[in-house]
Amino acid sequence: MRGKRAGGELLYILSGIVFGVFGAAFTAGVLLLGTALSVTAIGVPLLAAGLLGARRLAGAQRRLAAALLGERIEQPPPRQDLPGFYGRMQSRLTDPYGWRAVAFFLLQPPQALLQAATVIFTWCWGVVALTFPIQQALGWNRVEGGWELAGFPLEPFPRTLLVSLAGLCLLWLAPKAVHVVLLPHRLLLRLLLGPRRPAARIRDLEESRALVVDDSAAVLRRIERDLHDGAQARMVSLIMQLTLLRESVPEGPARELAGKAQETASLAVRELRELVRGIHPPVLDQGLETALAALADTVPIRTVLRVEVPRLRAAVESIAYFCVAELLTNAAKHSGADEVRISATLDGGLLRIEVADDGHGGATVLAGSGLVGLRDRAGTVDGRLLIHSPAGGPTRITVELPAGR
Amino acid sequence: MRVVIADDAVILRDGLAQLLELRGHTVVAAVKDAEALRHAVAEHGPDIAVIDVRMPPTHTDEGLRAALQMRRDHPGVGIMLFSQYVETRYVKDLVAESAAGVGYLLKERVADLDDFVDALRRVAGGGTALDPEVLPHLLGGPRGTLDRLSPREREVLALMAEGRTNDAIARRLVVSGRAVEKHVANIFTKLGLPPSGEDHRRVLAVLRYLEGT
Image (cartoon, rainbow over all chains, first blue to last red; front, side):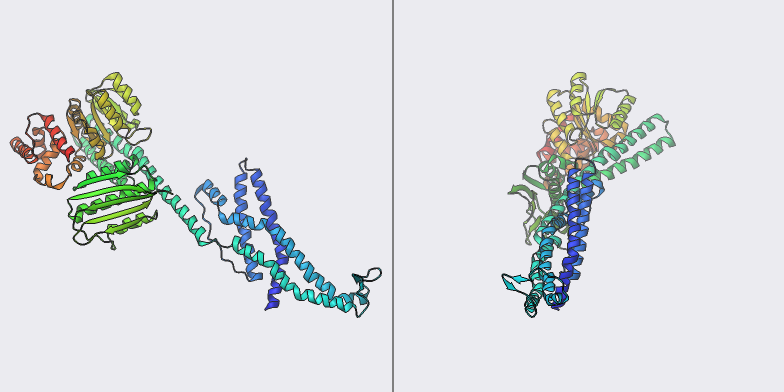
């Protein structure tokens, strides 16, 4: 068992020297070249390719460590590129595992030097010393006046056996020394080539999720604007042209047909309007206060609105809007309330929205209830939904959304 | 009528101008943003301005803000907001000061040219024209008060708020003029408003009621 470990470690050092030197040369080369050329068009792609290469090399190093050192290092999470050329570049350049692999390989040369010195000093010298009597007997490895150590002659036989003994000691020591010298290397392997700690990973996930949430809010807003300026405007234009047609043809089937076509187009315009309302109500562009006031106008209950918040992240405003829309609809439909109070306040980076009615209560988060959807929606930004709705009422539902990054 | 059109979509400006000219009205200017609208109104002194709510640069409520400013600078010019959206906020902002000479129509209303031109003429003459799609939102105020009205009376109230005369309401609902008069009288009684003979004044009364809710 120990012999196997010693053999593996020795082999690892020997192959690791070759591999490590190659890895170090590769990463240093790409890094230098990529940085030097970063003013040109190929610098950044080169750097990105280098980071990807370093990541691949790290994979090979992990397999080598697993096979020879028995050091099983978990794979880092798979890489995912953002779409498009620039997305790909950005993903690769900001890939933490690529940079960690680079750091690992740049730290390789001094380690390899130390490891090589250890192998030479223990294994090689041990073998040389052990076989000293044989060398002398064969007439190899002679020096003028004979070998001596601090005035103490090491020849002839049987004194040469003392050297042999020293060699034996070195060889006994060799596996232990190699093992010890590999300890910091194993630590580096685990630290730099393994998955990062959960905390760092969670921070990463939070960041990427915030990006996705903001991105989808921006996309929805763009879709809304494109529809408004594109499809919707064209449909209205079509309605105008059909009106022109109706005005310019005599009474008869053609005019009737134009009228029918107008009805269809009007229906399409209405449907588009409803669709847009569901994805990004235009009034949201004017801020939460205006948007919530517009919402409050649409419910058949008396509403008292108090909004004291500045402009926030688009995604947060949108979630807040749809939450209030749902809660107001619920209050109007199910609570039997006469009045509903809506307040939105910002408290230390936390947007707190409260919708309270004087109805008969009993609102719960059950499967199929709209409140589940709200809780999920709020969850996308780590928000939460607090329900206070005892049977008999009143109902007070609070949505808390972290408003900052 | 002498009309100024403000809309950032060229196909809509042109289409609308064509339709209005077909009915013998003069489009004195067709502009693409609020700034140009301000100049056009100052220069031409039109009877009415047809204004898209969303215009550059922010595409949010430039048209509405330009309309509010116009109200102060040129109170005699009728304002017809022309939008793809039902946002009661816009209407409330607009009628907050005075509902005379303002209108809010969805863009697809151009399908009925007679109705559309009628609405423009009413607004140019100091009346009101609110889109039927917008009214239910405004009428959806507190229960209690509106619950007192019968469904028929609510219908009549909606048509009144659109700015229609009793005759027009009678035609629309296919009832006699006398029946409509009775409904109107009931509405005023139930809402505690004194009846009035003048068309646009009763619309103002309706809107004041809506505003007060």
